[in-house]
Image (cartoon, rainbow, N blue to C red; front, side, top):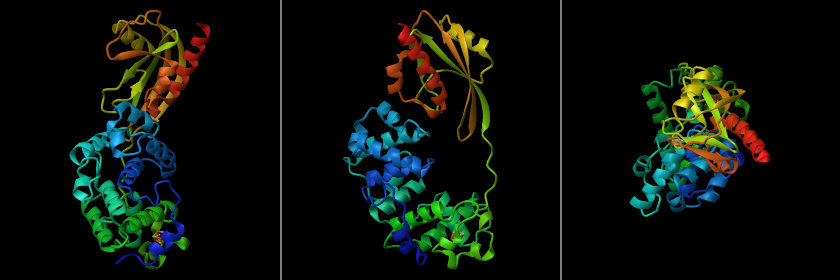
Length: 349
Ligand code: SF4
């Protein structure tokens, strides 16, 4: 039993998005991976560009990882891009480049969880799997009046059962997308727009007038603050860059970083211990970046050296090459400052 009126509403009100209406599993998959943890409006622009760079699963599989990370630059949560790349290679080798068409095989791909597998299976292959994300959880908990913490496994299962019972078997992909759209535009967090909702007549939260309190969620732990020193170390018109090996931002390029930073002198000392004789040039102020579980409170400095010795795991890069490297959003302020410094140095040279 579907929700009456839901698909009629969807046919009239669905959001115009570049990945709407497509059934190609590769395109659906890319859009769903991008939509994990990123706003739909942001994804729309990235999606079109990504598909023009890597139009098929084979093209993505054959691309160097750095090119994939570069195309992902600014979207954040870069493990998604690395997994997307690995999964494309798996599809190319294990499935001859043909996207697998059953739920279990899709679910087994790197970076694919229950939600993404269900979204791809339902939208691209018409299989009746509900794609339960934050939007669906909110709408279902309100419609059915679930007033327990939706983070508890038994409550999650209850929502899954309800979704399975109500999914439209003829149009499961549209059913999922309809609930995603209702959750994004009508049944929004806080106070929903019940007057515009096709589910209003059957909605328990509307009847009880407590939709703004649902879904119930235990408060999330706030991200842990970490002090980070960022050193822009230049030699003329070149700057010291490092490819991250740490799990956070792995594969992306960053400036000289000291996590757990303890002052400019300590950074200078650390640089000297790497064999770089640097002089302090300027304090470039502060920047902040919030990750899921931690916040980087960054202090930016410019150091200069006249001898660009080779430093293990680092490379010296000019402004043009810097622009081509995949850098995380956390480095946005530092990159802007670095470009100003490098461009000024290039004018003098
Ligand atoms: S009636 Fe209101 S609370 Fe219920 S699903 Fe619709 S928008 Fe959400």
